Length: 143
Image (cartoon, rainbow, N blue to C red; front, side, top):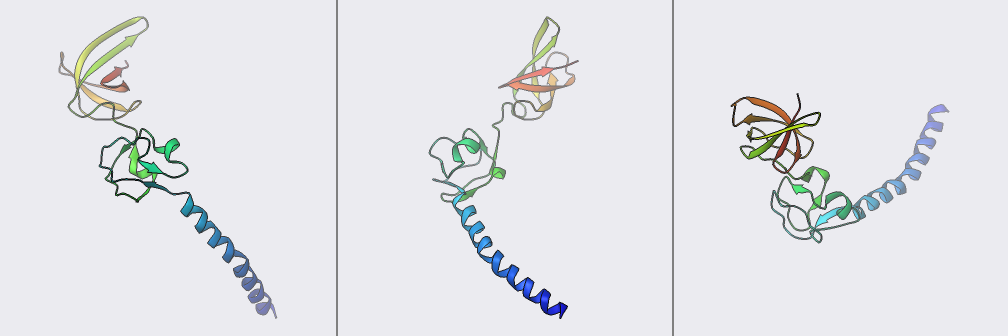
């Protein structure tokens, strides 16, 4: 008697959840962001490159981490914030302490975007220092 009851309940649950699953699949297909043209790795996404409901808010101004074909579905894994400092690039090293500000040049030993911490070799002293990227080609060193 109990097994028959569980069989009927499971059958009813399967019937009720089947339309819901099909409906969820339809919703996710319409929410996809796709590329309108082929895009190369390293390209910065501009208006008109993507189509979909979230294309402009989430992807505009982002840099591609891999090539994308026309019509391909985009995910957040395809993009990153554009690099502000590249490896071996000459950067401005900025040191601030209170009202004192000193600036020199250095060579980036890593790469990153605004807010990332990277290692930089001071061109004058030839010492490695750690700093935070504050803008294009600018690294702020904290004591």
